Length: 410
Image (cartoon, rainbow, N blue to C red; front, side):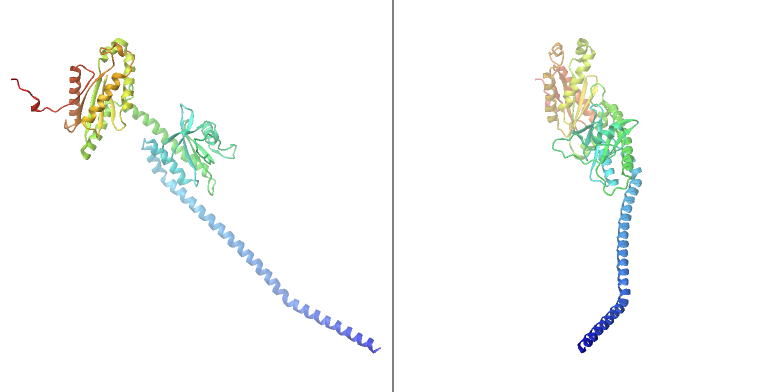
């Protein structure tokens, strides 16, 4: 009985203890609950602050990008009058091409800029290097690849928007460029070329419009260059032979004389004409005479270095200005020209009095022989007529008169 009472007391004690512990735990829980809720609130605020900071950074990055973009656009817009004036004031194709490429690089954030010029005769778009040289080995037919499609349709083409992308020809050992969009260069419905741009870094969506604007500027510049260069060439070149005309020759004389005086270098003149040309015309007809003039002009132009000026002086008479060449060196050159013409198989040459087509010429030099180029030309002309009198098919070098050359009769 006592044992039963003891067990009961123990159970009652344990129950009371458990109750007390539960009460204590409950009371502790009441104190800790606000603390936990506070921590949850703190974590939520931290996440919110973190997200807000991230968003601020994103916005700051976007603002910076837009500022940079606006700066590029502003510089572009402010420079447009200067660029247009510069492009339209030069007839140098290399300079125009390199300016167009540089303009695209300045305004559009891309690593790839390509300029293609349309060759109407070959019906091909030919790539132009950054220094303005046409690369004949990298070409696109109209409709071929993104470049060719832009040229064919005369409208902006963007990869992935109705185009299969860049799939044109490549030059030998050339890596295929990554062209993303292409804009045609045209003026008055005439295709002049195409501008291609690669992938855009951080695109704003306006790159296509900007590329079209640059293409429009390029169209005016290239058309002016082509038209004015053609007009300038007509004013400078003899239409029959393709050589420079007399007017342009004397225009160049002034420049070379100034350089000669400044640098103390000679200028030699070689003046020559075709022997018995009237006989050739009368025998074979004027059409054949024109062919002879053209063929002979091509021979002399190819044989003469680019720094010299070859011109048709009048009729069957020609003149060559040789800067920085002494009279003796000019005489060697003139003799080689004479020999080349005498040995060339011109049509009907056997009908000529000498059995060949030949020339007679004279050589003189500035300032050794005359105080002006006009005086030197007169001396070369006198030497030419001396060659005619001596039997033709020869070149005579002018020699200054000296009293020691006069022989007295015994």
